[in-house]
Amino acid sequence: MREYIVQTWESGNRRAYQYLGLFSFLVVIYAIYLATHLRLIHAGAETDSFWGTLAKLCLISALPFAALAYSDETWCSNDAAPVCVAAWVAVCVGLSFQCKVCALGVATVFFPFVVSALLAHGFGTLCRFAKDRIHSL
Image (cartoon, rainbow, N blue to C red; front, side, top):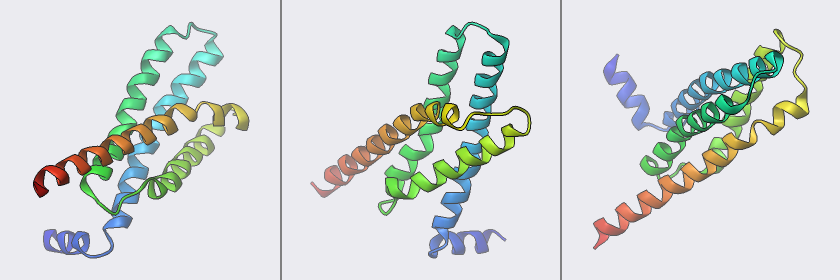
């Protein structure tokens, strides 16, 4: 089994595994975020603790983007965008069974995750460029 996974990873199918892994990770992070956000809205609670939670979740969700940009030269932000949107839509559909979610409201709270993903991707690319530059000297 291990040999099959390694052989598949080294073949052209590793992109599918990257998509699946990123999608699964983002679904969990986005679900935590939206559940917390909706709970605070419905409870009418203070949003001070929300901003700390948002910052932590944005940082955590950005880590795979930096790792993929650093480790895979062919990975680009165009690869990540469909996975992010698919994960966001999956979580919104899942949570819409519990609460009637406004589409515009859900779209606006997705913005911090897009920004953090772009920044992390740029950071990972910059680190890979610096590593390649150092190795070429």
